[in-house]
Each structure stands twice: as structure tokens, then as C-alpha cells.
Image 1 (cartoon, rainbow, N blue to C red):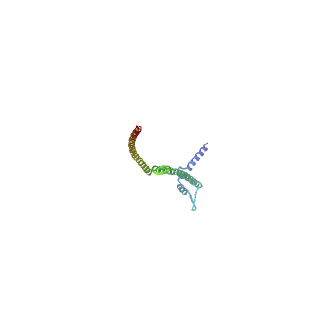
Image 2: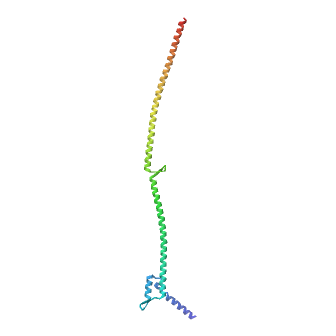
Image 3: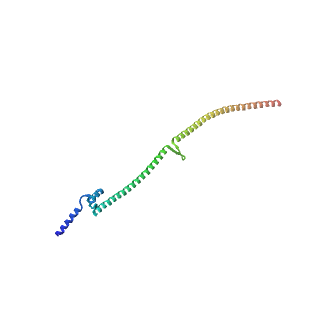
Length: 198
């Protein structure tokens, strides 16, 4: 049992010796440090450097891990770039829509649509004011003409009434003369009949 215990202690000691706390020896340091450590620990035999296979494997594993991390970073950067491009595209579309809406609002604030035609508001207001001025002028002319016609009609009626009164007076005097002449004629006839019968 004692031998088993000793064997276990020896294995633990070898494990701790094999894995030091140095990140370069563990294969967790920077690649340049690991490469320099690899060169420093290599043995030179007849002008050739001899490198231990497990050290090359450790450096190779570090290189592949670094490349995987770089590829993962590139993929992540590409996906982030794509999402940012999509965000930029949507923002550009929103900006274009808002600019179009803004231009439409500016156009609508300066123009007015009447009977399907666009007019500038100042031109339309000028046309409306001219139309209203002409309309007011026509109404004023009609009112003045109405007053003139009313006065002419009143004067004509007054003249008609004067002429009718004069005519009525003339007719009465004509009827009276006719009656007077009829009486005189009847008197003259009666006298002649009296003279013939007498």
C-alpha cells in the first residue's frame, strides 16, 4: 500500500512539473513568445535545431486555436457589419421617406389644389381677390344702375300720373263740353221744332 501511495505521489509530482505556471510553457501565451520559447529550448546538433514533437504540437495547437479565434472574430465582425449595413439601409430609407414627406409638406404649405390643378397660394389668393373685386364692382354697378332706374321709373311714374291727371281733366272737360254742346244742340233743335210747329 505504501508503494501505491509513493507511486501516486510521484505521478502527482510529474504532473505538476509537466504543467508549470508559465503561460509560454503551457501553450497559453502569445504566439511570438511561444515561438521564441520553442527556439530557445531547441537543442542544436551539428548545426540543426532539434525541436521536441510535443512542443511543436503545443505551438501548432496554439496557432490553430488563434486562427479559430481570428476566424470567429471575422465571422462575428462580418455579421455585425451586415447588421449595421441593414440598420444603415433602413435608416437611409426612413431618411428618404422623411425627406420626401418634408418636401411634400413644404410643397403643400406653398400650394393649393383647386379643381385638380396646383396653384401657388399667393397666386390663388391674388386670383380670388381679383375675382371678388370684380364681383363687388359688378354688384356696385348693378346697385347704381338699380338706383338710376328706380329714379327714372319714379320720374316716369310721376310724369305718367301728371299726364293721366291732365288727361283725366281733359276728358272731364271734353265730356262736359260734349254735354254742353249736346244740350245746346238739343235746345237748338227744340227751338227749331217749336218754330216749325208754331
